[in-house]
Length: 234
Image 1 (spheres, rainbow, N blue to C red):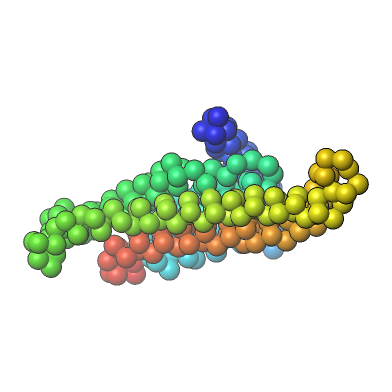
Image 2: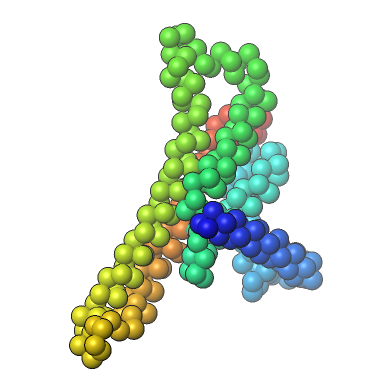
């Protein structure tokens, strides 16, 4: 049942992103190109420009156009997946299969860039650097980035969800302690949750979700940029 729920959430999230892209694109098409962007469309343009600047600083302006679309989709998907629990849905990024798949896509792109700009010979030689005995460690090193990125995102989002469940349980216990004497069962409506939970949601869902998105995206951009020669970036 948990896996089925996650699949439905992922499908819903994908549909929402697709609809959002269509709506935003139509709003941007209607903007006056000579007027200063404002409102929601202006905020979207500012966000896209910020992502473009981050990518171009790492990969160079010549190659930024190739990677910005993926980074934008990655940023949007992970952030929305992290905060969707605010709406009563299970967060897809609290499922390791989702974070692992995202990390695999990023890892494949990193290997592609390394092969493209370093060459097949240099890529294979990197497994025995500085000496051949380092082959097992270098193989592990190739995959360690993928594992660490997936585990970091998964662990933080899962822990945030667990913390909020514990907080809601604590709020229920506090509510029972304060007003449980008015009922024979000793259980009352969890009236403390609306008082205490919103501030904690702001941290565990919004703030933590944003930080984890920023970390994952930044690592992706930096690791891709590190394998691009400086002469190509200029």
